[in-house]
Length: 176
Image (cartoon, rainbow, N blue to C red; front, top):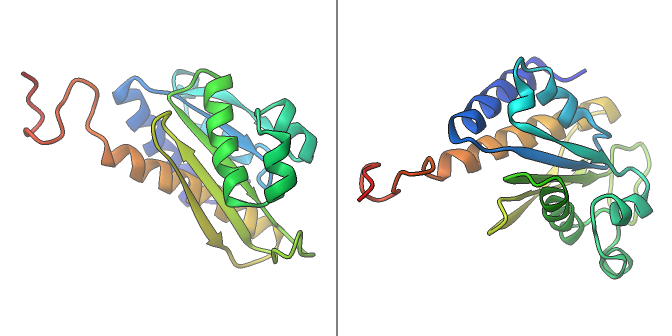
């Protein structure tokens, strides 16, 4: 289950998306559906959550989220380019406004020289994709919950950076 902070932030994410008439989809490796489940716990989430894919197995990153096999071969499943491709691919495949890609290592063992707690979080709006590299503390459950909380908080931050549709960013919200 997610932390109360993630649940609270999920409500804020839902409200912000709803106000904008926007949607989100997620491709989740490390979190195995926990991001979508946390957002889906918010009443009315069907208006903003398009869907997602659990891409725990490396081959599913390609078949379900559209990550190029060549990218996976070159960068590995736990990497910045893979997180970006997950976010972009799931956004496109689910016809969502926003895409979230989460990949990383929950532990206890390292994966491809990445220690437990290393997380790559991709966020895409179809024009700009950003990836955050995180090092989260704790056991498997804490790392997974922390990744969901970070994904919710970072998405909320990106939503706050953009003006609402129909409002100009530099003119106090007045449209010509």
